[in-house]
Length: 132
Length: 274
Image (cartoon, rainbow over all chains, first blue to last red; front, side):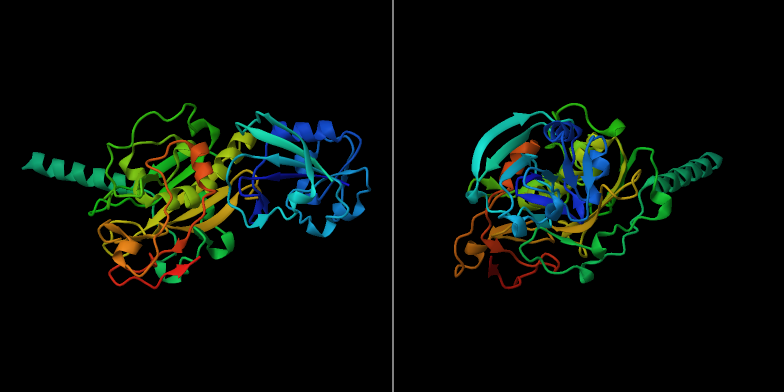
């Protein structure tokens, strides 16, 4: 399974049951990368409504198959560590309030690519791809 | 005599007008119902639900600041922030022309203790050297406490074009010149809080430093209490660059300081190592 998630400088992913941030350029990149199919939770639906093959599920991490992508904003990943073989990590390069943090151990993955791009509302977003 | 009466009447109208324009402190929060500082720079208040009233919600941008009180202290600042009032250029003007209440700058191990802290951050409304919008706050308070919330609000507005109702209330105990902290409230209007909703109290403290909130005087805890270990401090002098400030957020802290909710007259509350 391929998981996509966004983090701030302190590896936070959410505050008060809300995403820390959003950026339409980042979403365009996600849609382009996951054209065939993308799973997400209901919370993310409005953000990804332009995706041509969006699959909204209460349990996207359970429902996605090995070849599928999951947009996992605000989801705990630790219970799915074995199932995740690719991780796409977007770094906001900003610090936001957080009460929920990224909970996978990155040392179990290998970084295979890293690139920066300018977002719509963020000066620099870093996209990192990790594989096992 | 008639002229004098007219002048008095005019003055009265002016005072009443100014009072009507000033944001009213409607927040039902006192230091008595805020928990002690405990390692986190902020604490959630009222389950993160801001204390705005229905009549506060609007999609017309504005910003209001309170007049200084008789001790020169700032009051509540409120804004409905939209893209139209956000700054489009980098901050250039220095803040040094403003001396907020309790401003007694000290340098600890090469780091300035205090920042001139915007109640409503520059990145939100572009309001810079406005004495009604600047309080004396520690670097920790400014960078670790307030800035993450300002970042979240600013980036949300930039991406969505929506408005965020935003209020910052400095809380002074008694006659203290330095605020114990601020209450920060925010609510995104167009999506009824789905994007942004928070209500937090941010502690105006600095790990390792004892602050006398009545006057703004400060001292290194290890000097004040020789039995304690040497501290490490953070913060930055009058920081203007949010990216640089973000980098500072990653620094580790060694101490929890005295309880700023109390009047900070010696002796302070016992310290604990974090």
